[in-house]
Image (tube, rainbow over all chains, first blue to last red; front, side, top):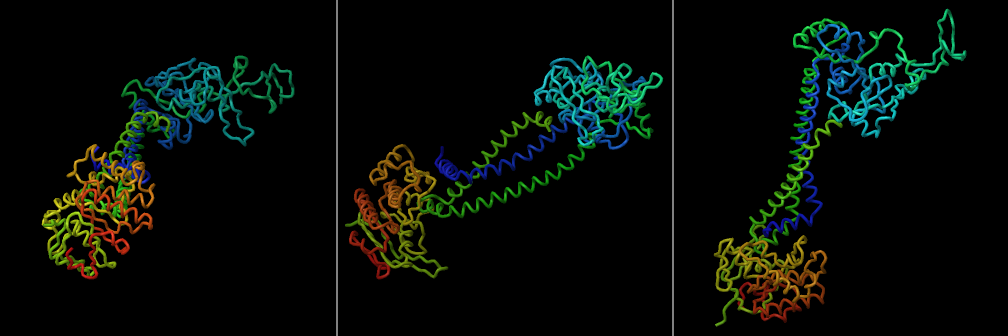
Length: 389
Length: 226
């Protein structure tokens, strides 16, 4: 170690707090813009990748962002629902495959995605344990859900109550976990998957109860007339679908009229996509969206916000620079006597100046090193961090 | 013929802002002598010491140390000359609080590359510290030392380059009577051991009988010749 470096190092080591504050200030100033840039870049990549893989979405007319964010990332407000008939219409057109999505409820605060088995194939989702949801009441957990809730095949999970103070609301449904998905590094890791019919049961459209035509318990019968039996409010609906009661579950009405949040449309060709888009462009109640366009639009807004962040960082950098100048000036004032002593002993003024510069350089180097390490770690963990966010 | 350690001719120096002016027509201090410079506050004792040491440059006249004109030297040459020929002991000790005792002693070597720093210098620092009674405190910081120990440390720093001239600016000004005596004797002994010239600025008249010569700046020191 050179003599001046030793002096500088000793000074910094003796004044640990001052040195640490300077290092922290500089590190934050250097690291924050990098961190924001990296996170936004990864967030963008993540959003875009999923949007790119989803060619078209049909949903109710309204907020496009809500519809796409809900259908792709299971976040945002619940958009208006459409009917299952729309999904069927797409399939019946012979131009595309339709995957219905019903995303209105949660189980232990994780979104419940009611869909068909095609969804798992479309997203390339495989189970690491158990099977996909094959019957009513079956549930498959996203990888992160299983990990964080410490649940696995054979366990059960309750749907969350939608309205605590509505005694007429549907009771939570106890569902059996039949599978756990492999980590996908996507929003699917944070969701709970059921068959769309199970989703309708959760919504109360379908239900199961004792066979009123066979029961001898008159307390649950409101009326009997010409072989038609009407139950009363005392009749209890099942809150769990088991092998013993699964056959009693049924739906009232036509499934075509049942709600879905949206329908993922997988056209068989570009021409089919164009034809379908044309059809929906004239629909007064539904819209067909290209998720990539919507997300690009959204990212445009994000990047506009980022510009504000950049301006903010420029100001932070300036403030830090001024702060550092202040620290140096105060330090010079405090150390004036010490510097004068060095000069009287036989040290040149230039050497005294070099001591100050070396101190700043060391602080800068340490800050750069820490910011570098933090940036490296951030780059390494960014995908996980983005998926958590 | 007696050779002079310090010789001043026609020296003038002024702080215009303060209206202060110092004029020494002629002053010479022989080698190996112990000389005290006395005078009331503000008469220029410290200024004279700084002029002799080459810390200040006179506006007129000449200062010679060991026959070499300090005044005519370049700044760098003057610094290098000062650090290797003159050991300065300050009243306020002027120690660096962030350096350990051992590092404070070798400070002249740390701040001036013209002096070669090697193991022998550290060995000499340890030996000096032993000789002034702080040998067991080499790894302490100045803040952990008593006033007397701090001044002993300052003395070690002044002596580490083995200077021919030892200058002290009221080195006992911050010490109690017991420490004053001890420090005075310590510096005098060290100077004697090295056969070095010792110039001390003081306002403590009770110490003057220990010096070979006394220059009173207030009375006639400005023209005095020892």
